[in-house]
Image 1 (cartoon, helix red, strand yellow):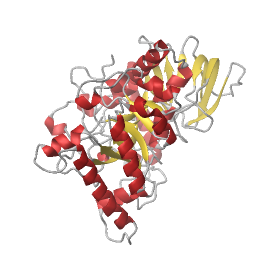
Image 2 (tube, helix red, strand yellow):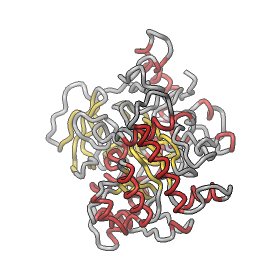
Image 3 (cartoon, one colour):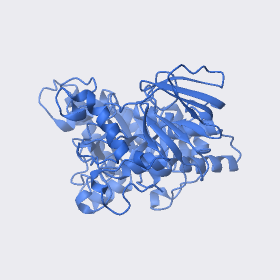
Length: 457
């Protein structure tokens, strides 16, 4: 195994791979149930865990419920039961005292560029934007992901991130496919791919595409150019999709997947008027937008977003860094929530992903300050269930419900406190981070021997 891990973690990895001995090729051999014809199929296999009971903690379950002094049971990679103190603990469970602490589902970042813009951030590692054409629907983010990016382990240890979506950048109108990952150490990106997660499709509107290609003297150089280029491509995709689809065409296969509803659209878009136009373009072409990302003006069209069942993936308070972000307000999330629209707090940042709980806390506070009551239990949805819903994985993770993946974070205090940190993190029931045990901090080969190896802030 090429991924270097501290002693305890290496033992864990070795145990996890013991079941793959039939081929001797590691985790690639024990693979998900993806059909053989699926290219670059997930080979993810959960690390081993033990039946665990967390007792006495405050549970924010991601489904909008809070249980004080509650109990969470998980075993064999799945949540077994969630309840109050009366919930019986079966024999053989490891009991963890959660008194004074909080339990949430694993935190999910819907918008990350870890692995495609890894640390160190030098040009040789910059693989997130195929900025050679406004339409690059044929590229897949997973082919740029570097599994040894130290950012993955920092997101796990500092932010409790258990799943994340890696997107291509926003230079292009159609930037390519995204990939959803489990945040686990792996030699290969296939070993991190979330089994059963649908692909996403990154689109971008507004300033970025018209700036990148307008500066080269080509279409698009205006917003109307953005839409003209998009509409022409969707028309061609519709024609291809309604044809025989016999000849391989990587670009058209992705666009047809969107039109078929199998690939979910994640559209970078800031301005409210432009988001409304995108919704009309989607109706014309025959696809659905799953989420607008960076939607700083979403609060202006919250009713439209609710009616079209589109989530808004937003920052808590980023605004004003370019013209189209000027009307961002810190009450954005609260106003969307108050209108019944779907809210997701995202990072788009290698540091921000380590503090999504604090970002959500800021958005909650700004809403409460203007008089909108939002419970902590609802707020935790913004970085768990709602993110999973937008990514098409809500049936498997995003909330602590019986039968779902045991992606669990034990916080040493209220996760919306600036002083709180993940104390332990489980992914599919396997303990992958323990703040009290330095041996449980994953370190990639790249970090070994370097200053700051395995550092956790």
